[in-house]
Image (tube, rainbow, N blue to C red):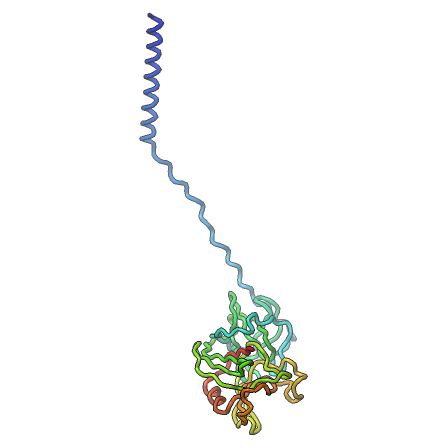
Length: 279
C-alpha cells in the first residue's frame, strides 16, 4: 500500500511538475517580445569609373589643314549610318585631337581651315569626351574633351545613294526633297561613308554655272586616279552646266547637281551638315 501510494504520489508529482512546466513554457512563449528583425547590410552603389583626362599635346604635332590630316585616328565605327547627327562642335580655338578618350594627341584642329569656319559633327559621346568626324581624311573620327568648344545643333542631313544617283535632303529627320545627280566614275568614285559640309567656296569657269561649291570633308580615296590639279583637293557638291550629265557616274568624285538644286542647297545648308554616301 505504501509502495502504491508512493508510486501514485510520485506519479502525481511528476504530472504536476510536467503541467507546471508546460504552463510556464506557454506563458513564456506568450509573453516573450519578438526579436528585432535583422537588417541586411546596405548595398553600395557601383563605382563610377573616373573620366579620362586629356594628356598634354606634345610639341611638334601636325595641324590639320585643307591639304592634310594626320595618321593614327580610329575608323568611324558607323561610317555608313544614315542616322541623323544632331550636334556639331565649333572649336574654341586651336585644339588637340586624340585617338581615344584620354588617349594620345595626334594633331591640332584649328578653328578655321582655308577660311572655312570649322564645325565638326559629333557622332559619339563618352563621359567627358566627344567623337567628331575628321576633315581632310575619309571615314575617321577623333576624340576631343567636351570643354574643347561650343556644341551647336545640326538640323539638316544629306544622303547620297550611288546606285540610284540620288541626293536626299532631310531636316529634323523629315525628307525635304530629293534629286537626281551625277556621281564619281568607277575609276574616281565618290568616297563612301560619312563626311560633312566644311563650307562654301567660289568656283571658276562656266561649267559650274557661276555658283559656289559646297566643300566636303572627304578627299579622293585614290589621289593618283584623278588629274594632278585635283589630287590635293576635296570632293564637293557643285552645280553643273550640262544637266544631261545628271543620273550618270562620270565625275572625279564630286556630286554634280543642277543649278537650281545648288541654289537651294546654298540657301539652306550651313557648315557641319553630315553627308552619308551609300551604295
